[in-house]
Image 1 (spheres, protein in one colour):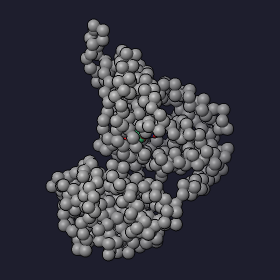
Image 2: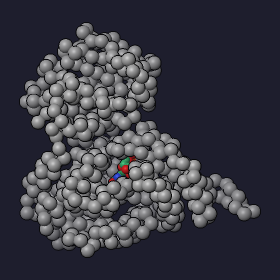
Image 3: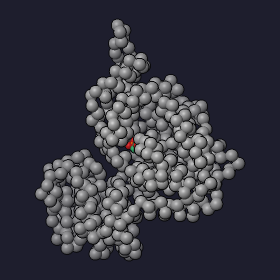
Length: 501
Ligand code: XMP
């Protein structure tokens, strides 16, 4: 089987690179950037991709790198910081750019102008010997280079993100034309390896799965059912932060199946702990801990030794917890950064932690889950708590639940295939003056968000029609006196994130 090794230098997108490669049916795995050339050769890669990273190649204490990797005779593609590493160790010069570039820029690459995501403060200012420039932008004269004789290639921009036009084709060109890879990797392999891994970890022990009803934990349930039939118990914690009627819907979907399913109503304990808390990371950490404590309480007699979660890769990377490198903490996903150190389970099983949303969906289909479960839009574990800016109270939750329901109903008039990947309302803590009838009103500002994305690591805001937006706004302000204004969020990720907190 063809294999690409991604060397991690701490960038946000390393799993996305691995994901793109696997999406092109080539097996890929990630290793720490500090690996020696000898150890790397042992894995027999057909190609090597060096990721971006937050460091400068010339800074003290920057990531270690064994330059012999560039002499293995295996093609190397350096992306962003990875390109600067190639330049630095091949005799080129890397310096702080006169103008840093963060965002989408026009890039002329091999004679074509493409939109490319740039995100860098440094750039290559002088080419190493044997290299030629293959791409440039207005501010960055060496935005891509190559040395085909040495099989070394660099891109300052990020071909792995959806923001870069034709990025997947650029990666495909590297894999198939430069590395000579064959498209011989299949998701079935993931099912087999993960089932074996689950059995290896848990043996005959019982497992308690935190089931939220979302795509990830549902797929995790299906995988556990296949790997260790009869050993898993699913516990759905209704923390009172769900959308309108969602707790009942989830109970209806999962009870009455061949599943050991329990619903725990935990609204009171969650709201009590969240009282007066406004800081987003504090909310996330409290919810993460309260989830585990509720699972522990539900695990009567400590029957289950292991806790299973449907954690997927973006949860891991954004929480700054990746195994191989030091990515920055963007937000602590409740199921990763929010897990307390002292838990009463022997260990945590996360069979989907290396996968992206679109892979998890494909896996769910392969495991036979119905489309309405697999295609559900994601809903974050901390629920509406991270869609309410400021303090979380039952009253504010109820306002958001109703507004969010009206907005979702308006969007859902679109045929399924045209709906954005995720759409929801956010209740801000800002108020605005208005006039209702002949009276002054002073209601909350509600923000509507809708995004398109495959991998949830980047997204584009959805240009929803004004018909949908007007319908939602009119209904919300008419039916909910507490809402004074409705605004629409038109920010991509990056620079924003999908959720507001
Ligand atoms: P962000 O806001 O990080 O969201 O751009 C990316 C995707 O992850 C979801 N999300 C979460 N999911 N626990 C989850 O299970 C969390 O703590 C969490 N935070 C964000 C978000 O809804 C989006 O789909």
